[in-house]
Length: 169
Image (cartoon, rainbow, N blue to C red; front, side):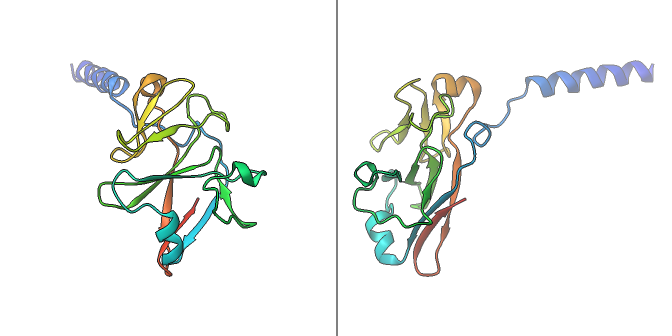
């Protein structure tokens, strides 16, 4: 009888683990790409940082300076903006959150989510998936990304001793 109880308990545990929710996957879909944007120094942070809930800014370094964002930002030789560019937003506590702009469904450098500060959602223009970037760390809220639990790739902004932040991986 104990062997039967053990088998039943094992079967229940196994079935529960298969049915349980899993975390949003945010790092496996988008390939590694270097990130380094220096926003250290209070003046640089005041100009290019985010200072309130829902405020957002994109950083995209390209070979053509006319296509870069922000237009007047001085990228240096060490600057890198991830796989598809970077989205910096302010969270509920006015802390910066940082994401790769590449949609994890499409997985292309050229398919970038667009951010709407009124809704605090980032939306893929191709597949239509939406992501909550201010309150839920880039978790998907609709579309194929929601079905597969593919969130935006996150990075961690590091405070600088000079004030401001360094965006890096």
